[in-house]
Image 1 (cartoon, rainbow, N blue to C red):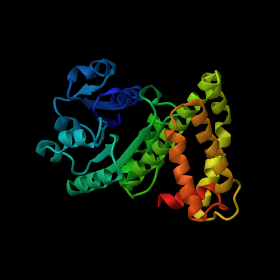
Image 2 (image 1 turned 90 degrees about the vertical axis):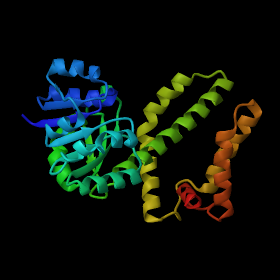
Image 3 (image 1 turned 30 degrees about the vertical axis):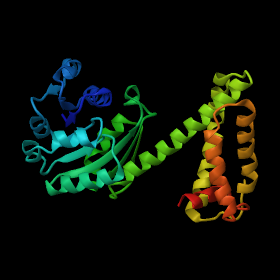
Image 4 (image 1 turned 90 degrees about the horizontal axis):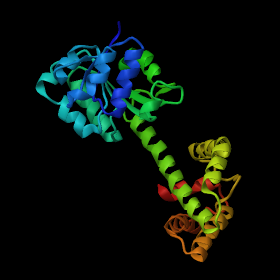
Length: 287
């Protein structure tokens, strides 16, 4: 049987361990609250008495806790560090690109191959085709881990040996996601002021999401190639829509922070002379 250790049995860590147990891996687990392992043990997992024993039980260890600070408090103990040489360590806790770099340097100093990862899924989605995991770091760690990571998520991407790439990609995704949330919640207030259905609007967004995805793909190409001069939608044209959002907020008396923030960025771009360029030229004022 293939052996994997999972440290951290919160909702996500427990889901990861459960998928691996179901896939007939020999899974060793450890958690600061041992009672959280009971259901997994009943399914066939082995509960280690401490983190060092857990790491020693398998060639590959996944740590999935709340953040890198908690991860360090568990892993940066002498008895744990002494077991890491020659093993693969996969970090699936939440962290920043710099924390990924620091973690890689720490693991390399102990002789471990390090893979940094970020999960884009909820715990119930683990093991499904819709789950995504971004990874980056040691190619050795990736090659040894790819097969079982693909059991955890239908979309597992390796972004190369630049260890910060997974965390940066995850943060970029979160930036897009939370920016969309803010836009949607402001949209809800617009609809509410006219007694229109918010849930119907949400359903409509779901239907047009593929089209929106194509638009974002185009904007990414424009930015990557620095090719703003042939706009499908110019900054000046888009500013008209932003001004309408500001006008509607004022007329209806709803919170105007979202459109005012957008308007300030667009005005800065227009003052810089980017009005006839693709809307993606807005990125220039963010640099």
